[in-house]
Length: 295
Picture 1 (cartoon, rainbow, N blue to C red):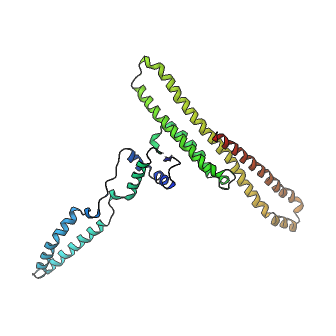
Picture 2 (cartoon, rainbow, N blue to C red):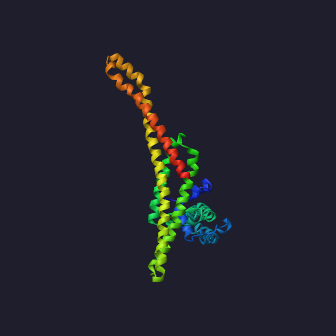
Picture 3 (tube, rainbow, N blue to C red):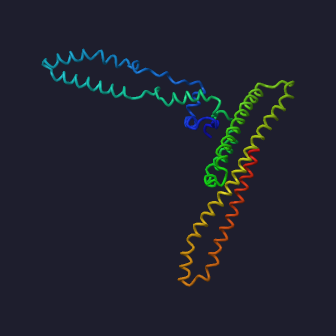
């Protein structure tokens, strides 16, 4: 289901948060990225050893080169140069803890705390309900009829994400209350408290039913949009076939078969008119469902 972000969060920040759900969970659990080190303080102990050993290695190499064992001097020189090159290469790598993206995600997660929700904010039942809402919203926003402006694409782009956030917010709150309620019941309920438990459970059940009613309204809207989408694609195919009709009619006339086939071909025009009416009717139904969502 991914990260649900409040629509008011800037798009670039919302994208960053959605792309880093595991890191957000770590931040939520208390993880803090290591402090950034200044370049002058990044020298490792091995670098200091290499620096201190350089005069000794040079002196020893000089002695060996003028001795009876000059080959040993060359071996020492080659070994030392190899060690230095390996160290330089390792210093050019970015350490695991020094990735700027982690710092950016951490800072934005803290700044926008409370304006995004993670998978762990929802219990199993709430996740299923939220996924239904997200599927309905996604099918509308990805539809061709929405992209072509046959629906109110501008209002969809604003209202549907707002609906997703409100549904997610309510489900997260409901999940937290249900968890507390289950923990309370697990500790055992005194007889004097039992009479209070039933109204609380009824409140939880009624709240879930109200959220489900919102989701069902979204699904009805998505169903009308899907019907319009089917009519839209069928109409496009019919129009494509109608554009090819002159070539078919020419072939039929030349072959002498036009009297037999023309009635069937002419039915394409009728089908196109029917699909146009279906599309208009489906779009009207979608608009009516949209108005119900606004209410």
